[in-house]
Image 1 (tube, rainbow, N blue to C red):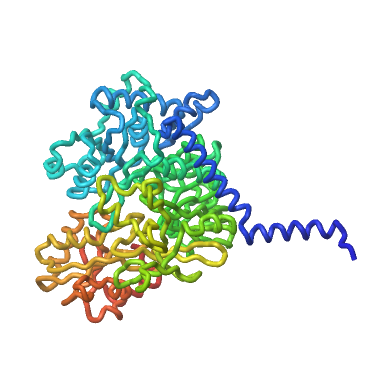
Image 2 (cartoon, rainbow, N blue to C red):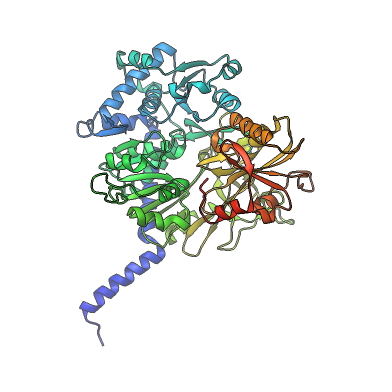
Length: 628
């Protein structure tokens, strides 16, 4: 019996929608289309030697339809595309005439978030120079190391962090010209004539050429300078714009530091690519976050996982006149970032009334990434998502392999020497395929650090002669095409949005006279994202109140705040592997549960010292009544 059209049509539509959702056809079309469009545009610019993203700014600034559109918003002030362009030309001319900055020259920038960061960055690109972004929290050896590695002969310093440039740093870098970017220098720029240098000065005809150096902590103990290529900047930002429905009418807000690629490449460059407004917060604070979001009418916000948890833990902001709850009084459509954990994913969306989560997974130096735009529970908590078409296309280019935890390397079959793919749903290290004949096409590595660059490359993985990039991360993939983050491999752990090197922290403890031995690792804590630092110490003397205060003082002086371990575990003898290496796996698993530490003494950072950590403290922490 024929089915009436009135009944058949809705059934067909419902069936098509189900099939689309199941196979991810529309999602793949949008994701793959965005990537393809960005890649084609990059190829076009490459042929014309116009890969420098400054040309995007110039395009909007010289188009009468967009020139007067708001571009930068910071602390209540606004600058249009035309104004930012003119400032960049003035400052570029000033850099060239006063400091002799040449095309391709690297210049170090140690700036906090502000419009000054953006102006210096665009000014350098305007004359064909390259910025090296310095983490403004760095001091002493780490700061000197980064500037030295960058090969910059001139380093511009934000007045707010000039105290970090101590005589010790100056003595280590006598060849570097340090310039504090004072109001007097800004006044010089204001009266400088804006001169546009010839295109030849900005010529970039290879997509793998470096556009920025962004420092990231690695396993060596000191930050490494990741080469951020034009390809990564152009394709990364170019993909994000259509993928998360970002338009010229939107406002992108971030209070993440611009020295990180998340805020600079995937935040600022995304807004620039779209011709949209970029609203910048100086520093993340639960007190000012939503105030700035509302004041700037932001439609997209950026997060790291901890950001969302902190916003959730903060009390609701109330209207001072009416007492109305302001949690949902904003224009935000999408939260974009990385590290939003599954346990707070929906709570965050529901409390603040945010329809979409745009989660991504990558690393500054990585050769690839994963993307998950989620409006429902289908891909909740996933760091990446691929439908049936995308899964076929990336097959073989993205692999998850079994780990050998004794060596913390991918497992290899004894007979063939090749790696073993994990079954669906099982965690393993994710690897990205590289061109063995031209590694730099997808992976440029670290600036002036050949050994570290090579250490991320695996060869002969599945067949003789192939090559893959090691992410150092444990991921798993399910039957729906969703990918989930499991853990980081090795010594490095992530806390407060920063990658912390355990060897650097261990070495800092080692310079204290009372410390015989230090083994540092990251531990999971209840109701917290990332891993908190814990240092197992063998001391030369019995612990005392004076010693605990001195250890806290010492480690705070040596390290950025985010790298200071929150816990100490005092032990008589370290657990070692068969090759006399510190055993991290056991102590990492035990964490700081007093019932699992086998009689060792535990301390935690409270009020500027390390105080005894008791069973009662653990119960408070486990019950979610303590935030670290």
